[in-house]
Image (cartoon, rainbow, N blue to C red; front, side, top):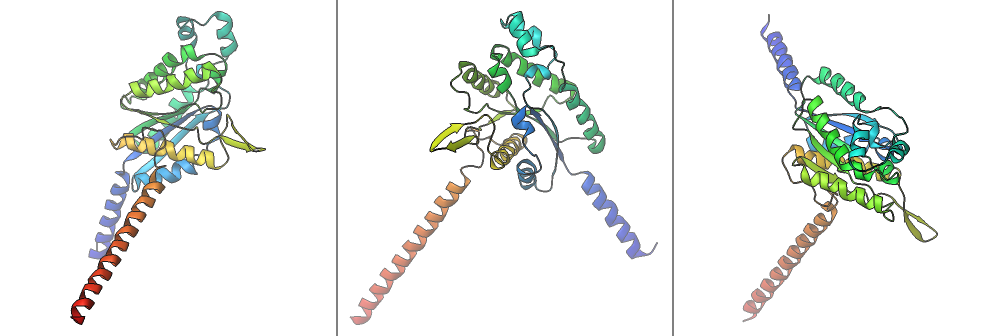
Length: 289
């Protein structure tokens, strides 16, 4: 083989190996309507590509509006009984439905694993709970979500799986069950060393006739774009061993910080001008003497 052809072949091989060795990070996006309403290709993937740079990010999405957590968890009815829900209450929430959304996560994960062979990290992003809060299912929610997370870590064989929970918005704050659900979601994050949360209280403000109301669903498209960005940023922090934003709004302080830096820069320039002017006056006075 001629030298330049050999060099070309070796370069192609090394380039191929380099591409294959790129770390791949998988995000699992799951939940009910606000997760279903998020287009991962806009806010989420756009932000993830910026953050991870040359590393590869992929996702699977299993979400549907109006679904209680029992659609992800076979053991929910037993957990509900254990936490004091009576049979009628359980029937009202469960409605004889099936566990529709757990196996699809496992199936899509398997398909992704066949494509990429290995994941550097796996992060579970969860945006769900409105249905359970409205139905009075909060007494069973904490044990249910903790079990769902544990089962995923076991069945995906990823005990290191990160979790990012989107806390319920402030839409239903007048209901005690809604406030209790928000508290439960925060407890789960606080108790999990690989957990972070996303705040959405600023994504659902609607103004009409001079009055501001908090809707269940977020503003389109900006609310869902920001939601995706926040999931990506909090996940990135967990993956890289950094501190996730404690207020659930990662990156939101950046414009303010930039403004502060710009102000400081202007102050320094102004000081330099004053110093130069003062020095010029001194030299002028010396010259006159």
